[in-house]
Length: 369
Image (tube, rainbow, N blue to C red):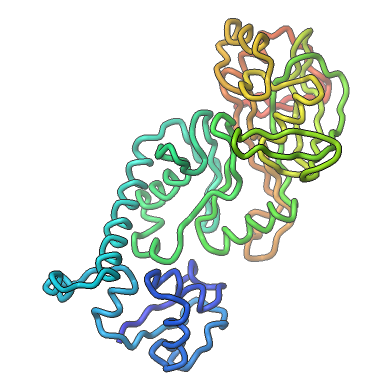
């Protein structure tokens, strides 16, 4: 018999969901058959699979060592001795185990390789980091390390996460920023933390504010609405008034110059490329934006200020009031300092600061200027 005790990162989910993660090589039919035959039991009793797990629950597996290791993706000496006669499914299991080892190495490599990521806040449930421009939020087909791998590597390095825990739970980023957008990324480091962040983002209860610098002068606050459609092949979106997913973007000027404006933007909805496409649609593209921006304007800004990517920064998030489990986060506000190039444009771009301007620029947080 093998026994597994449920911890915080497994609690709160259905037993069958846990079993799929714990035994990735086992199919649906096999797992439910084992539950019916009481080869898998919960707290010593027969289970159906729909039970919600709690901390301290025990799941017992009445399998041989070889069968248990086969379905959980582990390799034992007995299997090694019979390697010559192993089945294709057993070879697949061993390859999966090696793949897990490779992923662990990838996490550690990402933590050592990526630079400029700073931690804003951390507790037992979440991690808030400031991502620099140029770093992927999640891994893509390029194979480059991403912030997601960096987070897991950091948690492994700090001892907050074990390789055993990774068998049933993977911490992950919950809000995605484009590669060349900088600022706050929130990550769930426990199952309950991931679920809480996901629900706040889904229900739009988490207020997200960006700072951006755009072409042209904008003197008054405003709100944009429309519909967003995406060209998957070009990875590009279009704002129109008829079809697609509804988008709403609110903005207000913080500093205004002759040909540029620094804006605070609040996402009312959150869609891919929403801010960049929405501002470009009204003739005020984001400075440095190569996809939706103005090529001549971008070239001039690169020469004047050294701007090499879009000046869009996730500067602030505001949490609503939360339950007792997350009381430490109730009403909490996180801010991320502006990148150096944005400070440079704000300070030397001949801008007139608005009386209500507030900046999140490493000590510059001024009002009523």
